Every structure is written in structure tokens, then in C-alpha cells.
Length: 314
Ligand code: OGA
Ligand code: NI
Image (cartoon, rainbow, N blue to C red; front, side):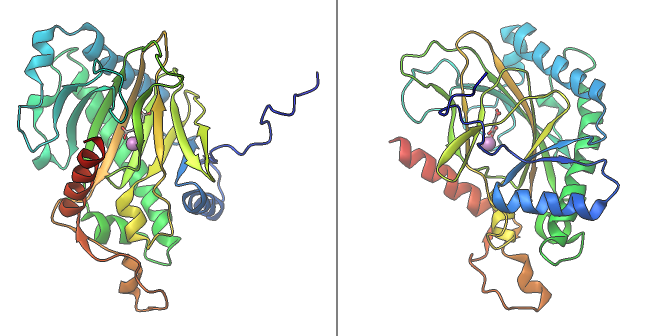
């Protein structure tokens, strides 16, 4: 059968990197290239057991679909809280421009001093153990990726993690579960999450089987393919700044399905709020590249982005 011309068969897709490749130089180069060109890539053979990912999805889905209102209320983000942890529902808002229509649950995973188990669902009982194990695995994966990205900047393997994110005692890992109930479109395309770049540094994302994530490149939106063995990695604002713009902070959004609920599990890697975010290459003394960004603390960056978002809405 002939393929119609307007079917964009030749359009590029989000790069896939096989982490089991024994040629680690090749893996590192692929990660660096994808981060420079797309700011997003998909990893396979990442060593996070498939059963663990299935369990993560199962316990999270249980919380959103089977808990009582009281159980959700018990982990709700307190009104006027500055802390993002907890459950928030925004999915039932009127479909109007520039509003995210998604329910979510945030809770920190690491370091231990940042964890507040008040925000972890009590049910199902294995919720905690599954999330703790996933956190250990996601951290290993994040540090591996930051190692390759550091080397791609001509820095030591540990540079981004230690100098950029504050190292093991300070880098904050947070779980965010997104829950997008179906939506009957009144317009052609109803968005779950508006186009944005991620405020935090690195995003490790696994969705359920309902498509919806799209990324922007070369003036076009591309669908991010789903496959249960894939983990999606997105570069956020801090790494864009720390790399002096070399790694892209990918613009992305999500669409809503008319029939089915979409969910995604996202581990966010954040620097501590008082960490100064700035191009790290200037520390190498090579100095041939002028810094494109002024130093800013991560906390200031977050405040600025939140303010901009509110302004756009009003
Ligand atoms: C996010 C995000 C995408 C998704 O949580 O910042 O972009 O697939 N999520 O849910
Ligand atoms: Ni995002």
C-alpha cells in the first residue's frame, strides 16, 4: 500500500537510547546529542525492573481511583501552603485557555529530611515500599544521566549533580503523579497541561498507555510514543542554565483523551531552593564561552516562573 504524502512518515521521532549498549561512549554521546537537539529522549534497558514500574502505576492508580474523598482530603495540600507537596484537584475546571486540567499528588522522595509521610497515601499498604524502591532506582538512573551530561560539557562526571544540584544530601527528588480524566472536547484540542518547560532540573516520566505527551521542536509538536519498556527523560530549566544553554529545556504539553483517563508518574530532580544556578563551565577556567545566564537561586527561578504563569492567565 502506498503511503499518502501527507502522512508524515519521515518526521523525526524523539531519540531512543539503549542503556544496555556495552559501548558506554556511544551511550553518552547519544544522551548528549538528544539533550542538545531535543531536550528529551527515551531510554530502554534502563535496569528499572518492569514489575516495579507496573507496581508503581498500580498503587498510584489505586490512590486516584479507589480512595475515598476523606482519604484524598487527608493528603491534600493545605490552603496557602508554600510547599507543593500534597493532593490538588484541577481537572474539573472550565475548559478555558491556559488552565491546566489535571489532578496531581506531589510528595518528596529524597533526601530523607525532605520527606513528609503525611502526604503519602496510606492505601494501598504497599504504596510506601513501592515508592521507596522506585525512588532508589530513579536516583541511580538520574545520576547516571547527569554524569553523561556533565562529561558532555567537558566537566567531571559529578559536576552537575554535586555543583548543580547540591549532591546526595541536598538534591531533592519529588514524586508527582498526574491524573487527567477524560474530557469531551468543545474545541478541537483540549489540553491537560499547557505548553511549559519544567521548572525543576531533570524529569523522569512514565505514563500509562493513554497517549498525550507532546514535545516541541523545529516549530512543530511531536507525539511522544508510548511503550511500557520506555522511560522518558526531559531536561528542565536549571540544566539549560547550568549548561549555558547547550542542553535544551524542552517545551512540552499534554492533550486529553475523550474516553480514557491518562496518568503519568514523574520523578522531579530539583536543586535546593538556596542553590545558585549558573553555567557550570565557567568553573573550569576554560572561559572561552561567555555565560549566557546571570546567577539566580533556584528559589528565585521558581518564584519568577510562578509569577509569569499567573500573569499570563490574568
Ligand atoms: C509535568 C508534565 C507530562 C505528562 O508534570 O510537568 O509535563 O505526560 N507532565 O503528564
Ligand atoms: Ni512538564
